[in-house]
Length: 570
Image 1 (cartoon, rainbow, N blue to C red):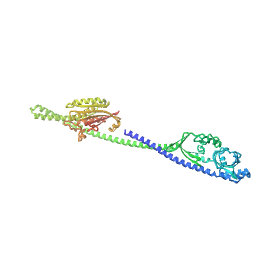
Image 2 (cartoon, rainbow, N blue to C red):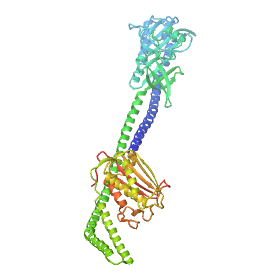
Image 3 (tube, helix red, strand yellow):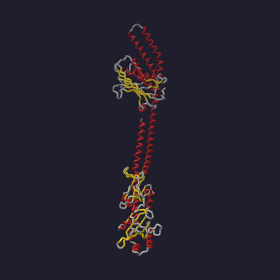
């Protein structure tokens, strides 16, 4: 059970370590991703603004050019003006530079000599033209109405004699910025003032929205032909917060969201970090933590197994040493018994026989008869001692045939009541035996019970005594602490009595052979019972007083391992 508890503890610890590692790693991944995306946002914003600032003043410069102003005074040649504008376009790096009159007609353009020349095209519908005609600078991002190429448009009114006579327009492309975004794992995109995605590292998201556009914006966009007929369909979007960070889910894929507004908060730049990348990194770290924890747990279990093995080996060695000592003691007793039988028994028979003969032959003399009776009794006691020693040595099990313990206890109960001298009437018995069929020697177990019960009855304080016998199964944990052999389960037979108990000064000697406080005892009763139990690899224990049971003075407990292949100790 301790090993199972340790395994459960290790599993809980591993689960906790993996979980904590995942959340700590996820937190770190989110913080790192947010920080890196913030840097990417600032970099993108800087590139975006640098590009716009580069061309911001070019429409104004073009509008003040003397050659262009003379064009509106009908004093300049259109071809020469086109060449001039083309030179300005080449030097600046803009995509197109062109001039429109008050009606929105393009009268000069840097691409005048190209197939898709703007010259002669009318762009009155463009918002940047309308804004310039109102006397303000205009700007917008749109798909070219003629070229079909998206770009950023800047416009400025052309003034002549304090009157707006035309509009100067510069168009430049942001494709380089968009290409730099594609080099990262993150998704970067820009939304124009209408909320339409016009730049994105995901090209399939261009000209789509993150939310449905209001009707007025849709109407204005179509009127200005900003997106060249694109449906401006909204993506499937949901948003929320997790671990203190905002996320956005687009088309069932989750991203960490970092956003920033630019150009007076009209435009919005967004960086989307794939959530799955952070989860994968955290899972990898959790897997490493799992493997490390598993290795540590395996190491702990191996160390525990090693210590358990060593402890078991020490216990087995102690048991072997104890059995060796017991064996040596028994061999000494056997030799002593043989010596007594050979050297003492025959003289005892002679002494006893002659004393008995003298008792019958001598004249009536009470003092002499009493002395002879004493001699005969002493010879009898010595003879019984020799028999007891021989019985102790000769305890050997026969074939182990399973028997019903409850029946055996009943037999022992009635036999001890019949053998006790003087007879007792006031004995209160309580017997509770859980069903069991023990694969042992029924005769030897019966003798052990007889010795224990006889000892209890002879140790009574008065003519009244209570005895309780309980037989019960014990769990593997309770059994494992008692045996050197691995036991799946064990059966415990406990005998309680309310007799005089055992004095503390003699308690450690009560199971030693030949130790007895009775005037005519051999001191081998409990020793025999212990010997029988140990023959079957069991444990014999005695306690006086009984812990937790004030009504009883003495407890004798027989604990037997219940194994499939029970090997009897010979």
